[in-house]
Amino acid sequence: DYDTEIGPWLGDSMASGVHSLAEAESGDRMLLAIETKDKGKAEDFAKKHLSDMNVFFVENVMVVADDDALSADSVKSGSIADNATYQADMAELGGSSLATVWFAPGLLTEAMAEAGATSGVETSQFDGLRDAHGALGLQVADDMLTLRTAIQAPSAPTTTGSVSDLVGGLPGDSVAVAGSVTSDDTFSQLWTMLEGQYGMVDSLTELGINGADDLAALVGTQAAFSFNYPDDQPVIGAVLRSDDPAKQKEIFDGLGDLFSQVPEPTIALGQEG
Image (cartoon, rainbow, N blue to C red; front, side, top):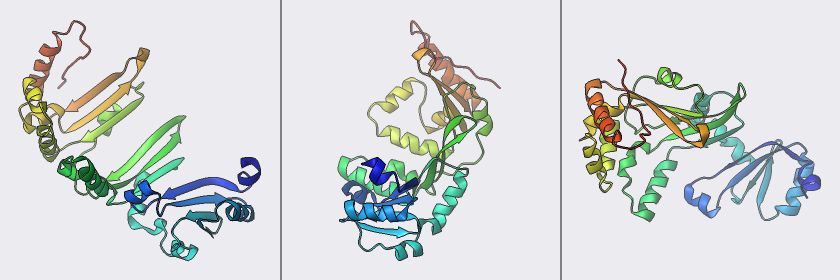
């Protein structure tokens, strides 16, 4: 019963962690750390309901694990809070979060290897995600719920610049916005990926996009996107800053001619500057 057995000792926060995806799927070596407000009552609960688990306390935090090698001393001597990568990612995230997620270098690499082994998908096209690590935080400010991310991808194409001004110019009533800085490597990798998708390159060629350079001219060096849902209809907007505006306009004109043949066009294209 929650009111009599859990409520009296349960604190305000908890965390869970795994050592690898394989162990997450099997449930092996999973950890659960629960803040307690009454350690004695928490101990009584653990003795009654968690007798088959490894349960120990680090101050007022109850740790539940199925790995008998873990102990309060091992946690204190090797806490994730002492991990330099974790510290850097959380500092980059900033602010105070209602909930956070952190993933270590190697997690996405393991996920890609598993996807390739089980599905036959060629994962080399996602090499930019190898060894990526980062943090996500759900934060509240000015009556808004915001998901903040701080992800480092050492293997990703190098980019420079900021899209804050581009994102800041998006409609104020947007329910979601996103921005990205690109590079030549970004489009080279993207085009290689598209070449592996049946019929995709042929479709792009019909739109006047004949290679990575054309794709780069269209999307540009900086891009920002908005999403809204007025009148129960999704509306997606994009602002694309290109170093080759002439080629971008040429592609826009081709797209405009194509969509003008639709009885009720649902897309509008324009260029400034």
